[in-house]
Every structure is written in structure tokens, then in C-alpha cells.
Length: 284
Image (cartoon, rainbow, N blue to C red; front, side):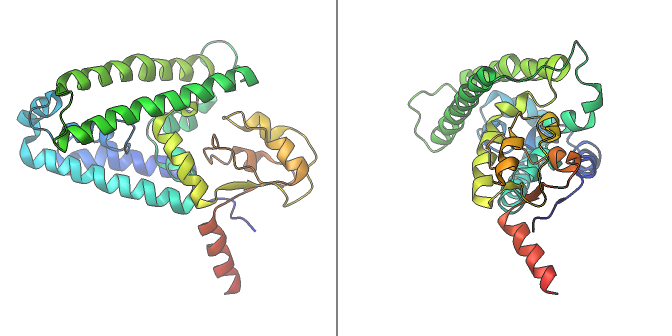
């Protein structure tokens, strides 16, 4: 029997917002903690702080000092540990639908307002194929930047121009990630960026290890299609529910909208750890 709800998404987002945007900056005297809440390979900003001659380090050192830079790096490591181990236990829902202050937060909190322009589009199979290739392209691109910085910091300086690499990554982020992401938010669908987020792709692979799945056989499916309509990632849940087979699609962010809207309570969210917890408490 799967556990339906891990944490209320909005409550998780609010706590994360309180820590990252209010409490954290006040306690650590650093208003840019936001950029240290997304683990590799989303951005190489933390790696750039390890190189004292990088443009990012030189621009922050007069403001933060050595103590501030060290604090930011420690904060980043702790966040990465929380995200990785949380995903292994609770699946992709942990980061993408509870902690992510990027696309996750915007899509859940401002969902009633989207889209601001026109009508919400339906993702076709052709568009899904395009997103499929775009997702792996951005992951490979992010890994190239990540491994370059790791090799550079390790002394393998076959292309020793860190400032150029930093600038290229900034251009990538501003042009094909931030602007496109905001375009998807405003014009089309709230979770547009989640289709090709590099961190989301990595977490989707980790969610396989966690055994993340949407259970579809808790009751008889009446094929009302409400789950497919509610799914922000265009996953065909109805077809799997008809067969009583679990949904293990890599695009699933674990938001739980399909579960909440199901009139017959056919669906449930589950991971190996959550199943273990359920059985443990059931025995008690």
C-alpha cells in the first residue's frame, strides 16, 4: 500500500523559501544563497568559487570575504547532501515538488495564473520527442562544464581559460535556460523548464534507484482522463491505470496532482523507503 502524501508541496516550498530567502541570508549575511540551492550539474558556480582567480570569485571576494565564500560552499554541500539522499528515499518529489525554488516553486505556487497569455497548450508526441532530445542535450552540456571545472581544478589544464568558460555558461543560462524558462512559465505551461532541467534529469535517474512510481491499482480505474489532464509533465497515466501497471516515467516530478484529482482514489505515490515505512507502522 503506497503512502499518498510525503509532504504538502506548498508547505515544503514555503519552508524552503523561508530558509533560503529570509533566514539564511540574514544569518549568513549572503543574499545570493539562492544560487547555491541547486546541486551539480545545474551550475558550476560552487566550483568557480574554488578557483581564486575566477571572475566569480573575484567579484564576490570584496563582498563576502574568505569566511563568506567558505560559508556559501558549506551551505551548497549541505544542500546537495539533502537533495541527493532525500531523492534516494522519497523520489523526485523531494526536490522537484517540495524544495526546488526554481521552476518547481513557480509552477506550483503560481499555477492558477498560468498561462498569462493565450490558452494552455497540450504537449503532442512530436513535442515530447523534441523535449526528449533537448533534455539530454542540456544534461550533456551541463556535464561538459562540470567536468571541465573539475579537471581544471585538479590540474588538468588542457584549455586554461576559466573566465571564458564562465562567460559561456552565463550566456547559456541567460539565453536558453532563464529566458526560455520564463517564456514557458508565462506563455505556455508552468513546468516547461522541468522537461529539460539538467538537475531534474539526474534526479529522475536517482528516482529509479529509489523505486519511485505511481501505483495505479488501488481501485478500479474508470478512464475519466482526469489524471492525464492534471499531469503537468504530459504523462499518459490513464493507459497505465487501465492495465493496473505502475507509472515509472522519467518525466514524473512526483507532484501528486494526478493522485489528488483521481475520483476513485486509484492512484498513489510510492518509493522503496516509503513502502518500508508503511509496512513498519502497519506492523505496529
